[in-house]
Image 1 (cartoon, rainbow over the protein chains, first blue to last red):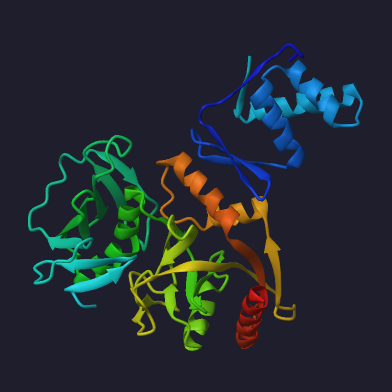
Image 2 (tube, rainbow over the protein chains, first blue to last red):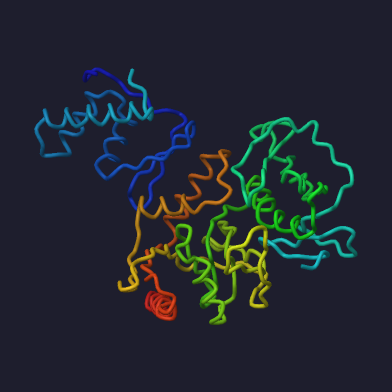
Length: 90
Length: 292
């Protein structure tokens, strides 16, 4: 995974918010996943920006955290989503 | 149970032959010959009431949900036609009328309305308090039926002690539930509809509050705390009945919308039947307090 990597959200994954918390359903497996507030923000950016470099830029504007830490958190998040087959890494 | 007419989940059931034909009624008819040879698509469920049960259809349900059959092995088979609002049943060797009624009310009709996309079913006890439906959800043995029964003793009308049909009323812009059927079973028994209660009205009610029953040690306090977000969603999903992998997106969207619209509370219930009156008072006080 590099900053040039892009992600694609899966068509079978549906997203809903309940009381501002995000819940994902993978209709292929009928599994549900929940994301906390920060995870929800990361997921929304990934779905919108697709390219990790663009997501990181946005995160830098939103959090007062070092770029290195943000990059590490972003990559860990993408890896977790990919392992759960909720996104595809291109 | 009267074999001629029955109310269940917002509909009249008309058992043929009948003198009365009601619009929007579900017609139930006995068929002497019923071939399921063409019904090659099968979905097997977990054993229920020690019986093998399965759903079968001529086409996969993804292709056509209108016509399917529900089979209780060696007992009864129901062929359902959603479009024509009719259900035919045929007898097998262990058939009794009581068994047919039990399976019809408890499984076939909820499946019928779920596949029709008309209702979303929850496993919950429910009564009417001040014109609103109050729901009691929880794990097995959490005390749903016991608390529902206590509210009945206190003259609150019964809505359900098992499966409850919910729907969104677009006109009133709120979620409502239909009174399920007038049978109540505050005990555990197989294939038993339970006792008929007179305190039952064939109508729908807006949802007031939902309580998730959390059994606690008998010495602990009765407590109420609000559930939000994922915690609320998870409990509603857990309490979903007729959880079929069809229309997943629509059903997911429904529960999320439902969760965003209704208030849900965890109700800590001490493991002591003598405290039931106190639990009742606490819930009533909470409902009244929330109204002020």
